[in-house]
Image (cartoon, rainbow, N blue to C red; front, side, top):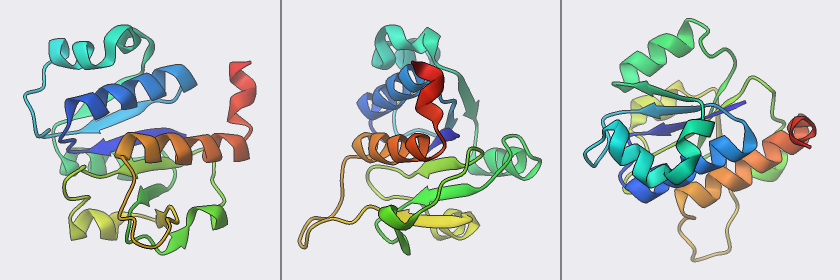
Length: 156
């Protein structure tokens, strides 16, 4: 299982993704361009001392990420988390080779990215609530995925 973040807008959220990936031993794909200047120094600052613990792959574009994914690097399903997702999180059966894709904080993902997903998942929220912070949503969904595939066993 791995995380992917599509064109992030907020450096602190990217830092939270890096920390989440590092602490749970899950690779992270960063799909650029980002909505802020990105270089290794800025990413390291946002990620604090977790940067060196994380396995990070940066892609210059959605096209580059998609080409790698279609070539089987990484293998498996592309699972998009979206407020417009058709399947509620409690009904999802995760697989060990899933890539969990999260969109921009400001706009989610465009229609072509939405259409490329093998599965579109939403976190049920109470009426009137629009969405969760993307890093918080990632932690919830990744935790459920790892629980289902016994991914936490390797961390003990």
